[in-house]
Image (cartoon, rainbow, N blue to C red; front, side):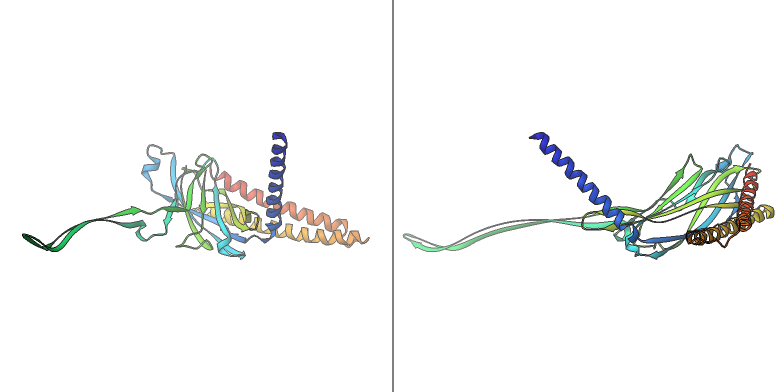
Length: 316
């Protein structure tokens, strides 16, 4: 009998899990859609931080400021669960400080709740009477009452929610930011980030990786699901503000990336058309055309790799 009950519970659990999974997969196309926009390059300035580079003349401190924008393409802001931003560097860049820091928010003004407690005690009794008893005569009344009140007032710290969490990752070679909905600010729009790092004295430029992702919440009669709502990842060139050559290479790196992406998009579009025509028994592209497109893509890819290699060489 116990075996039968246990078997029924297992099958019921499997059925519920299947319902939740099917519901999440069915709603995947109806989640909010977020689009991110990243900078084409990052200008870095050398700053004075003796507390960071004390005793290390071979190191210097740099500060990088960048802005990442998020736009709601589809859905509503109330559906968004959070945004996650990650900025990853290499072994030549070690993070020492960052902004914004972890932020808490409460629903109460001044983050405090004023509490008033009152306690009241009262006591009363009375005696009234009139009559005649021979040989004595009695008449009159007697009342007594007392009241005691106590009042205390104090302030209580209000509960707070995390609206922004930040910290280092990968042994201080990167930073993460997790942003949640807030009553005082909007998730949609531009957000500024600042990173302070220690690099070799010879550092002139480098490449960092920026990853952005969003999650949205969808509810149904059976479950509540967290669904991906958008993501973006790119390699971004960094350059020292006083170095014109490094700035030019960072710009070339972005231009080569853009050109390569455009060629890739065109090739994929042509490939779809070619596949449709091939299925119908015809062909409009010769072998030379295919070879030319392939050569263009390879040249564009080599240009991206060359610019990236130049920037990374400047980090040593």
